[in-house]
Image 1: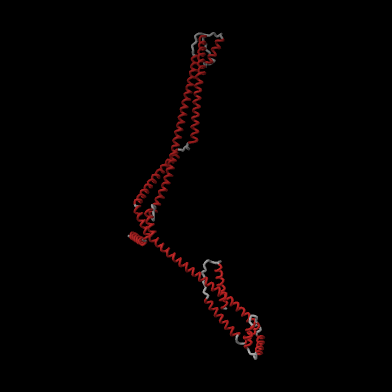
Image 2: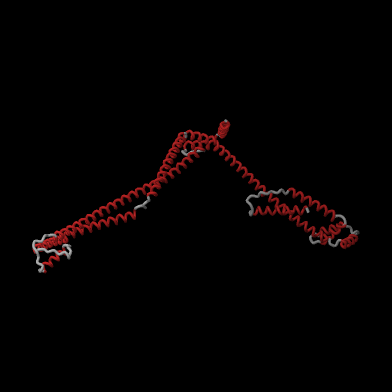
Amino acid sequence: MEMNAVLGRMASTAQELSHYHSGDGEPIYLTYSDFHSYLLMDASCMKELNQWFVKQLDTGPYRLVAEEGKSKCSWVSLNETSNVLVRDSENSHHQRLSELQRLRSIFGTSERQWVEAQVENAKQQAILMTFKAQVTSDEAHIHLDLHSLRRKHAEFAGELSSLYRKEEKLLSETIPDLCSELAQLQDTYILQGDYDLKVMRQELYITRQKVFINHLINQLSRHQFLKLACQLEKKTMHGAYSLLKVIELELQGYLSATKSRVGHCIALVQAASDVPEQGAVDDRDTFLHGVRDLLSIYSNAQVGLSTYVSAPGIVQQLSNLHSDLMALQSDLEHTLPGDRNRCLNDLCTLVQNLQQLLFASSTTAQPILTPWTLMKELDEMEKVNAKLSTAVEDVTLEHCKKNEIVKHHSQEITFQRRVFVDFFCNPERLRNQVKELTSRVTALQTS
């Protein structure tokens, strides 16, 4: 059992080594097995097996079976058989034959089992020799790999030591110099801490205030634009109202002139009808009575109240009527067409102006606000103006605070650069300063 376990371990180890040397596995073989103990155990097992075979086959009744088996085996030479037979005396030959026959009858399978055991032993010996040769070659490969690993380890150790020296040089000389130069030349803030937080907070607040102020300014400009639009619309409406008043006055003037002219015509007719008669007309003269009736009709006299006029009066009335007729005809032909054309032109101009005003107000003017809505907007504007004034005051105050902070900026920058250099070059001094500040804060809190 022990030999089988040893052979199994050797077979697995040989399989791993063959897999390693084939190049299919990892590039570096990390498992190393010491075969010395296995070889010692194998030697002890072989020694015990040889002793057992010698004890069982070289002495006692099994010796005869072994000799007989050797004589009948093809792999045993004739010289060995003859030598064995010569060593025995002829006297005991018959005794040994009888003993062999008896033993063969008792142990019929012993010869076959012994031969199988010998064959298996030979196979195990061949496998063991193969394993020993493979172990020897594997030890040589392992020795070479170990030597290469040691050489690489030595190279890596040298490189690591040089890198350690470079790192110490950089930490002690190069990095502090670069940090100090960076702190001197760079314009940005380095390790500013609370100061950066305060400045960023102030800038954020100021930015929001500026956005709110721009919003208020835009709102105020919209209100101002609306106010101007309302004023322009109001002026436009006043202009249109005054123009309508002027048109009304012109029409009233034309109406009064027309009425005066009609009154003048009526007065002329009345005057013509009121001329005193200078001679009576004979009642039998139907012609004169017909003319008189016509004159009374044109003079707006009642037909039932016929008056008697003389022939010269009738002639005078006819001449007056003719002169009035000529005057009216001249007015109708000369004066009235000009007045009519002028009135039509004025009316057309007025209509065009009204159309322009109406179209302009409908396309460009803002919606007309009621007095209450306008009052509310004005109140809102006043409130916005008050908020704007407050915001401007707050922004001014924040600017003053920022200016106060900026006054001490150079001292804080110097202190921060010193802290930055101490952080890399002299951390112990920085720790002492932190402890000192902590103790001061604690003392102030307790007091």
